[in-house]
Length: 189
Image (cartoon, rainbow, N blue to C red; front, side, top):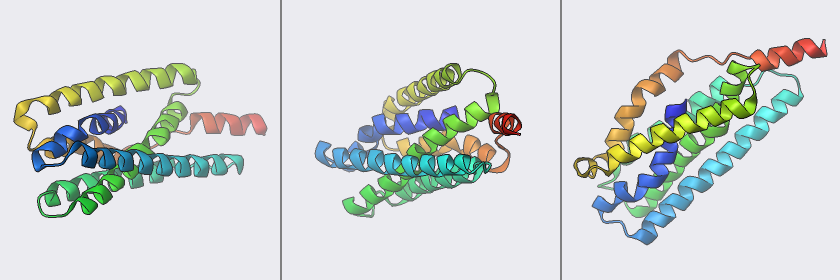
């Protein structure tokens, strides 16, 4: 999960590098970045409110379903964008970036909650700090790779290739362990 968080942060930073070879101005890149952040904020907020609603009803949260859905939206957005970046107009690039932001950035609060659930009874502050630092490191490494001249024309492909094994693992094998939720259920009984 840290890899996806790192990639989401790296994507935000390198979007200018990824779009510059295709003739995008700084203003156009700014629009793409704003849409990426805004859709991620909207999706993450909606998902967080939904999870909070489930917890208030003492229903086991649907972390795995939401994580898989958001990650699939983000990966599909990157794939469609990389395949069509040369043939579609700027409006479509902004729409694809919105889908990527909705997928990758909405995933962030859910990933943190899953990690806290899984590692319970460790302190949340310690867990989130560790996860964020690992994510920062992975994002920094991905940024460095994408800044290399050789990757200027194929940065989106690099992101897809790097994320693919992590995506496949989370889609097919990852299951949230509800240690904190189950502990709170026992306390209420």
